[in-house]
Length: 271
Length: 278
Image 1 (cartoon, rainbow over the protein chains, first blue to last red):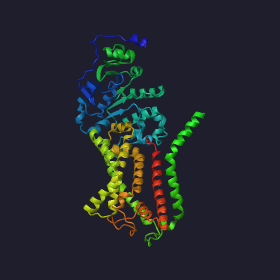
Image 2: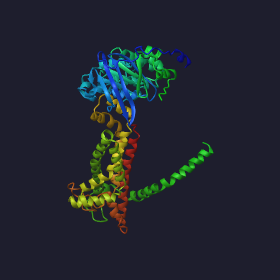
Image 3: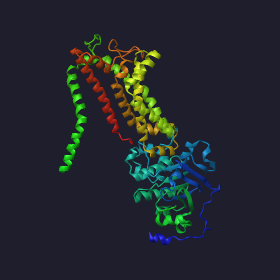
Image 4: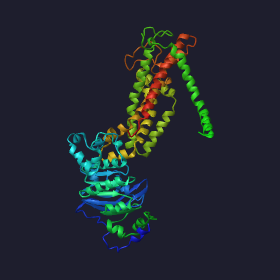
C-alpha cells in the first residue's frame, strides 16, 4: 500500500484530465448531465462523458458510486433518468427501432454470468430471432466464440448444457452471446470479479482485442486490472463523475483528491 | 452423535409427533375401512343401480369430481397467470400491495361463503341452476388467490440476472415471458397448479348446493347439468349411519378421494425438486 502511495503524484489541473463532454465528432456514445434518482435517493448526478468509436474505457470507483447503475442507464435498463444520452449520434430515447433494438446494439455483460437453461449453442443464439437463427451459419458461432476466447474449450460440446461450464467459461459465453448480436459497443460490469487468474487473463485478452473495433466500457474494482487494460479511465464517486482521462496519466497523476484517496486506499470518503 | 445431540433429536421428534400422528392415524383408518370394500366393479362397473345405499359404481362421482376440478383450474389458472404477470411486469408498488392484500383477504374467506354467493348470484340471479359450470366457477374463485400468489412467488424467484440478461439482449416483454420466465418458472407454476387441483378436489361445502346432486346423474349433459362428486357423495352417505352398506361406500369413496389428492400432492412435490435454474 505504501509503494502505491509513493507512486501517486499530483499534476497541475491544466493537464487534459476531463474527457470532452460535447464532442459529437468521433464518438459512439455521448452522455450529458445524466442524473438518476431511485426511491428518492440520487444515484447519479450530472454525469457527462463521451466514448470514442473504439478503445478500452475503464469505469472505476468505490462501491455504491453508481457505476453499475450508470451501465444500466446506458443500456436503458433504467430508463427514468434525466439528461441526454446519444448513441451513434442518435438520441437513445428516440432510437429509430425502439428500446429493445437499442439494447441489442449495446452488449451488457453482468458481474455474475446469467445463462439460460439450455445448451451452450442455444445460449449463444439466444438473442436472435427464430428467423435470424435459421440463416445463422455455424461459422458465425465459431467466430464469436473465438472472439470470446472460448472456442477451443467448447468446440466439441456445443450441445452440452450451459450449466456444465465453469464460471469463467460461463462469463465468456455471456460475452459471446452479446457479440452474436453484432453490438456497437460493449458494457461490462466487473466481468472478472471472483474469477481465477487464468480466466481473468482470457477475458482481458479478449476484451482488448474487441476494443480495437468497438468501444468497450468495463467496470472494475481491480486497479491492477484497470492498469493492464489501459485506455481511458472514468472515476466515479457518490454518483458524481469525479475525473476521467488517459489511464496512464490518471494512475500516475490523479488530479482530484477523491481519486488520489481512492487509489491510495481503494476507499473513498466523499463526505 | 453425542448424548446431547441424541437427546435433542429425541425431543424434537417427540415435538413433531402430535403433528404427524393424528393425520397418520386418520389416513390409516380410512384405508383400513375403505380398501376392503373397494373393488374394480365399484370403480368402473355399470351405473344402472344408483338407488340410495345400493350404488354399484363410483364412476359418476369420480368423473364429476375430476370435471369440477379440471374446469376450476382451467378457469383460474389463466387468470392467476395473467395477474402474476401484471404484478411482475406492469404493476406499481401500490397496485402490487392492493393485489396481494386482496388475495390474502380472499384466501381467508370460508368456502361456504363462496358457496352461498354462488347459490344466490349464479344459481338464482343468473339462472345457471345447480350445475357443473356453477361449481367450476365457485371452485375457480376459491383456488384463484392460492394460484395467483403461487405464480407471483414463482416469478419472484426467477434470478434477477436472467431477466436482466434477457432484457439486455433486446427481448421484448412477450419474448421474456415466453423464452425465459415460463421455461424457468414452470416447475413452480405446475406445483401451484397441482396443489390448486388438490384443493379443488377437497372442497365440499361450496359445491354442495351449487353443483352437485346425490344421484340420478351419470354424466352431465351440458355445463348447465348438475353432477355428482366424491366429496358430496361421502357427505350424503355418511349421514346414513344406520345403513352399513352406505357407510361402506362412503369409506370406499374416501379412499379414492385420498388417492387422487395424494397423487396430486406427490406430483407437486416431485416438481418442487426441479431446480428453478434448470
